[in-house]
Image (cartoon, rainbow, N blue to C red; front, side):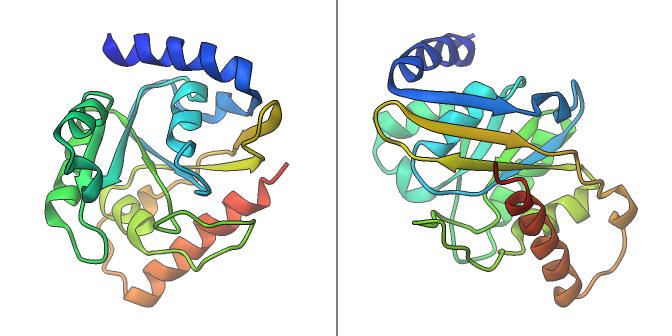
Length: 192
């Protein structure tokens, strides 16, 4: 309920700040677990994904954001859970699997952090590893445009990438990296 209220409120505010457009939201499955994988340019990105996605999103957020009790409590109530970046965070991976068991959608950023000025980083293996272990589909999303007053911001949702065929397979680090790079390629191929 709180999530829905915030979504409506923020959508109203964003309407006056940006010319926001979402394309391909029908590619988000109506039910069942999924990963929304999106390029990451700004702190505004999770908000834009949340207000354009037809389903409630859960998301990993860097653990530093939870250090402030008030802000940490707010983002936790909006579906965030902490991840300790740069190390294998088993608690975050467990949380992701619990999200999938509940049939929810999780937002992830394959590049692992914000990328400025249309640069492109190498994909981190996290999205592909979690998708491969869980077998959930990955929906690529490309965010383009500029966050400036009345600037056009477009989120393009692509067709789901199935991962069920990889579930249970023993895969090398190189094979996981190849899958991760493939997800990132699909995200950038959607650029409007």
